[in-house]
Length: 309
Length: 301
Image (cartoon, rainbow over all chains, first blue to last red; front, top):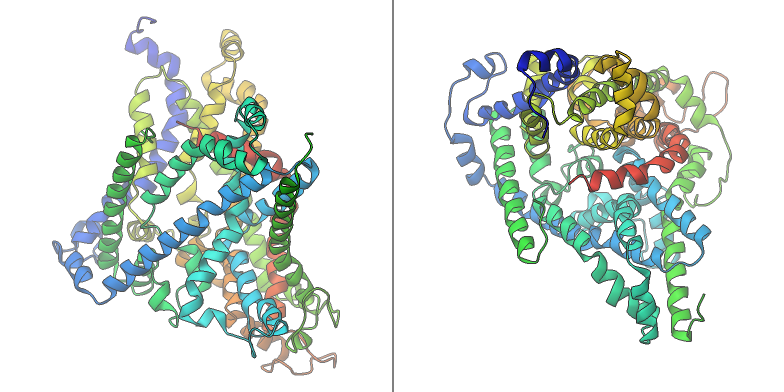
């Protein structure tokens, strides 16, 4: 260890380093820390004209109102169901893709599929939503054309205005957008597996299919577990942009009974209806559950030998 | 390669078929959108436009480029990307360089202060109220300032700076360079890849983001293209644009005497492709860098 220089000398040497750090620190203070303090609005009857400082206190009124509101159960159900569906379908899809890509011998083919499947990740949800709306529309929507040709339906279905189809559409568009990009991490994990393992397995008579489940999957399990923990910690973040885009920025009320999750509810009530304190309370309730879930998931993972921290 | 058994051959074929299907499913919506954007709108409404246009036309694109609002929104987006990316990369990299020196005074508090914001945030409503109280709403700057510092990008920058050889900076300091001088003259020139990666990521974020403008801006002349597109897709804006073009009737005959065939659907497809063009054009560069970016980010530890 180097001996510490006296403070004066240190400052003379490193003052301009602090000069580089301070703008960032100030920006984070204003745009991250002040909003954290801003959660006090949840305990106030916030009024835009009075501001944080002068709005009257309201205790836990807004929380009680939310728990007793008829929206509460619908929103909680939608949030949990959409998250679980994402966990069941959107989570394993990139793992499956990585496993499939790993079986491809021809490097050029592999590269083409990777290039194509990564692309949608970089498109805005607005564009992805545009594709979804166009594919599903009654007016020349390709899905309707295909199903009519196959005689599965007799006339075009207005997919986006039926509650029954909303979850399926939401999950499918999520998978479409991110399956490729999310597979990158798993492909990297697979490329780190010792090739000797495969050699000795094939000497033991395991075919490629068998090797996939006996070597590849167990070897990337640590990565899968870490991403699983993160996903469980995110259960309350069921979706936001994707849902807003598919429901016309939350305006489409036809499917609201299945599309409204906590985040879109906070947005609609808070920003569109200007009930700031009530919406802030709902948002704070969500953050609290998120923290508990993350801690819980990490405990579980630690028991199986993995941990985030 | 070792010889495959017949079972393995079947398995291989399934793998290839599945991947080809995935490729088709990914590309088809793009292709279909391109086809619809080049097909006369009135004809598209008759259906069955899938892989090839039936009545080829450039009218949809003409309307996109003739409508002043769309070209203006495109320019707002370009301006946002340029200003937002430059400032954000500059400030984030400065912060990261400072924090790549673990021996400085207050190093631990600084780090904790930054990392903490990754796990806790006030949420949508407090941020909204704050930006309103700061009078940022309905200004161009609301699109840029609140997202200037990305702690996630800071960590990627920092990881890169820490791996630079020590000698590099020491020799600069011997020559009497200040720390800022070392950063500008020595560190930035050798950090091309990480700057390129994070600048591309930031630019893509700014180009794609529609939500910030949707909540803070209600002046038409400040909306970026992504927000305009969001309104067009839900056809309220598209109908209005068609109406101004044709004097109130979507299928009226325009001044030149030709039948106006653009519909809200053909118009949205054309706008959508114009809006996604920049992303598709920079995608080859993105692809060159992002794998590295993702992996550095995920092993930040």
